[in-house]
Length: 247
Length: 330
Image (tube, rainbow over all chains, first blue to last red; front, side):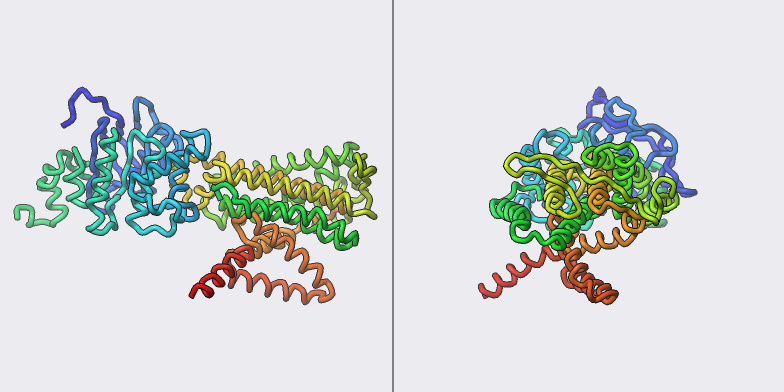
């Protein structure tokens, strides 16, 4: 699907992230090409969210480098990485509870605007885009889980990222809202965004991802199309347990 | 908070200012004016503390240090260097700002709020002990006296304005101007992009940072501005009271009173600390006859308000209106 000439937007090179004696991510390397959707898969504790945190700047890696858009960003703090063009959502949503939905999004939009009114107008567009138009002036603490996930996306979009990290945007979302969220992520890709998603939902992964990386215990175990990953013997073994691998 | 003010809000603000400006026309009672002056000093103090704790979410309990630093710096500079209090008030506020930035730095790296509380409290205690023990300069608990008053000046139409202990009027108007300016500064900050980023930081720090908010800059800014305003209030206090002791100007009692004011009036609101300052300063004075029993009444009042109006007295009116509206419609 991707042409080989396309440059890599993000290059994670030999990253190790340890907390005390626990190595959460072990010598991980990955590249993401502009315009693609990469899925990170793996059981709980595989190091997916830690990988996100290292890319977003929350954790400084013990070793390794991160290059984004030709710039070494390994030592940048999260706000610096945001300005460089990396947006993210949180697995456990973090709304600004006492701000309205549109004000939540304005926080991300402000650096791109000279006045509050301009930022509000643009924030309003992102709120509409994620389908929260009817709740724009409600305090964020009044939102449901699904709405909070959408708010996370609108906020991150307002920072005008080149790369967006989505951490389990379908987690905790009921089956009825799932297709809507998947459509929304597709829309983001169609706007020219590059995405890395952490997902457990196989339907979401097969519909969205161009490529998937399967992690376990901090290392990369397999890489390929979602279908290839799903039929990978080691992956099946991990998810279904020994003996069922050929079932 | 980030929408333009409605006309009734402008009207309310204008009415409050006019009423405060007209008080001396109704009464020239020196004691009453004194209570109002104290209320306004505390109004600045509580509003500035609310900026850091209520709006930015940094739970600090050491703001009385800035009050004391402002008071002593202005007093000492005007006594020893012979500079006019009109000038030393601002120098003192800048000194308090420098200390505010100094204590803001370690707080940047502390994520646990109880630790922030202890660090700031400890810092204020250090300031108090240093002032107590530098007796050759501050005279310690014996009290620093001989602090010059503000120089008088001539105003067209009104004539000579003199700052003397006998006449509280000039002090009343001076602190009223300082209070309005302080609250205006805080309101302007909170309604700007900085205020939006600050509330985002308070509600979800990690998320704010991921959206490009520079936490270091925000925290230093809020500490600097807050320390400056508290420093101004302290400096004014020094030249108004004209005698300073470490217990009165840097005592923990001051901080407790200010926290109570913000809680009673309403934390994280612009008007809450002002309402709280008015009620608590007034209550302390009204209950003087009760001696130590007033502490009992005082404690009960704080507990009742925190229990039944956890967001402060300023939420009382909207709450009653809503009740009333729902009753009459049903």
